[in-house]
Length: 449
Ligand SMILES: Cc1ncc(COP(=O)(O)O)c(C=O)c1O
Image 1 (cartoon, rainbow, N blue to C red):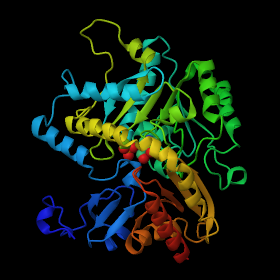
Image 2: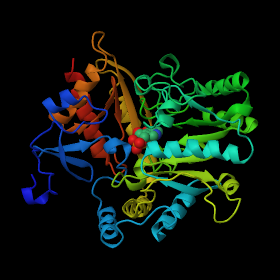
Image 3: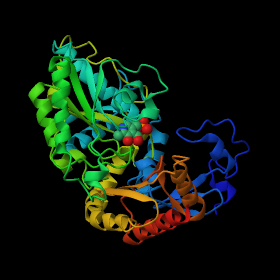
Image 4: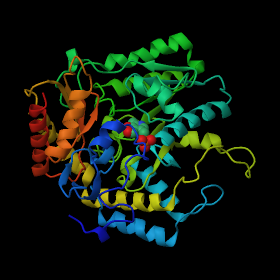
């Protein structure tokens, strides 16, 4: 266990009061009764307030793809903090922002070559939706205002993101949301896809629903379609084979922009820099966040195709072309973390590593198939979801208990949404650590009634 002087001020293992902090997306009362406090992180492991090591089965929240407290990233952040703590993001900038944008543009496929920076996935999504609307507006297609999302989609928590998102609890409390939004059907069918490794054979036809939506509203009213290439937060739904290509074709036919929300899938989760690359489909925009800094400093953004950027570059030179941005867009600390992270991904070949481990990871995931209450398992890249049968009287409780006991009793961090467990380790995970993660998860599933 670390000594008291090892902690940043206020980070000592026992906070004097748990009440004031309203914890996001967390049952606060239950958490505060038996907190899951993390005080340190290194490589594949967290350290708890009690001094226990917990293996990180989830890369934090799908973000710490390079593992924790990696020296090159830490050094870059420290250096930036000491040399350029902040520079205004409107009307001024700093060299690092241009370097990182160029690196991201190089990494993205096709002519996706301009980068707009934000600070989170939610902001990235709002930025992409606004760019889509403004793009049509400036090209004289102001009637194209509809946005199309997908059932079970997660695009963060801004009003744009929850409007195009398709997770009921994230929507139902928050009023009318954005107008003019419609949704594609989700792509999951347990009957046709149960226990599939990778992309399921069944379901490409579900993309054709976009034609139905176009027939209903007319293409001239539709600005963009946004989907996660692999739906992560709802429980790892890899796209059916051919689905994304069909979506691209239909969008092209109707002049509709296609946005891939790659907040989870970019930076190696599926064994490639982007899911667009894995699936050979070039969208008009890619949103990113999380893995761009390996979670070390908040950052998000949108990579847009050249014709979209070019469409804005008109009018008097001194006029702002896009009335959008954030105080902390391309914050120097985030940029420093981003540059160091991309370098580390490349030097250690972490995207390729994820690709090489995919088969073994899928095998280890499916080995849990026969355990009690396991209703389905899905895997793709280094991501797995395990659906547990909900208890009839208490949906979500079985999943919650598995996550809780995993942390307290089996030294493994598991992500849970409802009764679905999700696993997505840092890409540095070793074969032994994969075995350890699934051993822990398997034991806790067996233990929880
Ligand atoms: C696909 C996708 N979009 C957007 C977000 C929102 O990101 P953030 O929590 O950084 O706002 C997430 C977060 O998990 C995500 O998975």
